[in-house]
Length: 631
Image 1 (cartoon, rainbow, N blue to C red):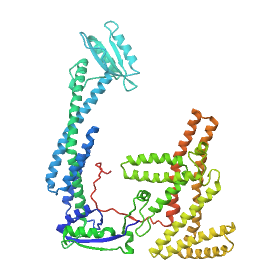
Image 2 (image 1 turned 90 degrees about the horizontal axis):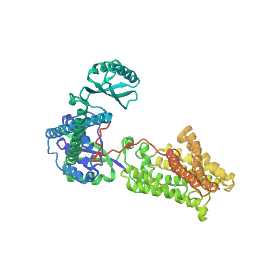
Image 3 (image 1 turned 60 degrees about the vertical axis):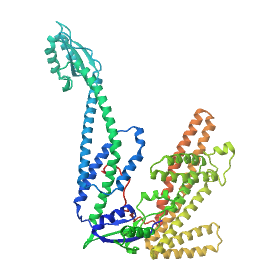
Image 4 (image 1 turned 180 degrees about the horizontal axis):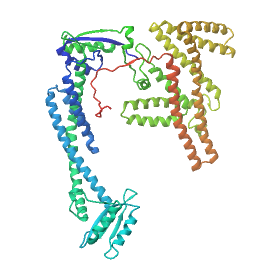
């Protein structure tokens, strides 16, 4: 249901402004109205914004540090630290906080920089050692080991020239290393000292490049360089392990405190931004907002206890011409609350109109379960959704799981009515008969039942629109809805008279109702009202999808059993049957949810839902924050 709201006006000395704003944020029920975009005393608010972003950067860095699973099992310590700091007064001055955060940020940045440098060096050495593998040659008396990057297609030409150059003397030995680049080779040469310049000239001529070790290993031969690199790599791994342990310890020690400071600064930023935008009049601060009426008396008592009459509070109900400005606050019982997820996909209902959540909670699972209509499918999905809901941490996931569970309950009930348990499996194995009809055989009764459901659902939507029009004293709106209801009922009565389902005496009454309905439609909605009434018949016929889609699902489930008949109780037969049942299972739940939702959004809610409301955003202390900056 839509909460009744009241307009609050609070006046107090400007010196008490921050104290009152802190009270409102802790109370968390007032939707503030901040008409002024002009900022007052923004210096402190700006400094707090800068400090908050510095803290956000620190916390992001600490969050990015890998922590073993066992170390993550102590969230209570972090929560306790947050509660302790938030319960204290804002004793530290902003300059002191800035210095503290900047000092910690500098220390953390220095450690992370060293960590990153070591990590980069480790990756470089690992890449070099993996590339070279084991050297085939070493420097020896009269011979030098050289490494060259050579294009693969030019290496045969260079090799022939080198062999000709060394034909009259000591041979140049070579070993080719494969590389990640398909068009390049890393060639290891063992060259006689006397031929080094000639071989170098040949390789330079074809664009080859001499491989050299990193600068810190300059002056060493390749074998010595590799040995030093291996030794350095081992040292780096030990240093990284020690630094990682130090960073993890830092996160465990400072993470909760930095998060607590971030939450505290974030809270103060919100407060100062509100304080800077409030209206002022001769040293008096004026704050206005909306809140649910049912919490007004409790709010008044708490305000009096806190400020002992130093804050003047005035409240009133909204005027009809203010309804467009009033935020829409929704309240539901425990059973219907999860169905509010349907309204998150559309704009909230306008204040003073109807909230369809409870009606969706009744009819959506009823329609979806009727489309599925298989007790076996419903039972399997019930087990899956129970497991998901038990393990889910997100409230939205838990709500969706609950909606699916209600669909499963109705699917099981409709499965009993249709005698379906994985198609005709129960009938084949245990001779189970349907409690009502077997829908794969009684096609027309099921389709007629679907149309009857549509008739009742559309008339209910029109009735809700009629009641809303009467409450809001919108005469034309009420006349249009009443006229549409009379036209629909008159046409139904005429059809039933023709089919002799009603006595002939009912026909004149139907004609009279039709005339009255057309008059009301024209008076209430004009030509548009007549067109809308005619479209209602299309809406009613649209409910045929309940029976038609359910019928196709039932036939597909029976087809799975037929494959077992044809292929026998064999591995192939069972595999095909299970595959068809799995496909039908997915399609049944996907299509039932999609089409049942469409029937509510278009055919039902279209008769009364006014999606013109404003979201209710009370000024409240945000406890669950993402450390990532909004992009």
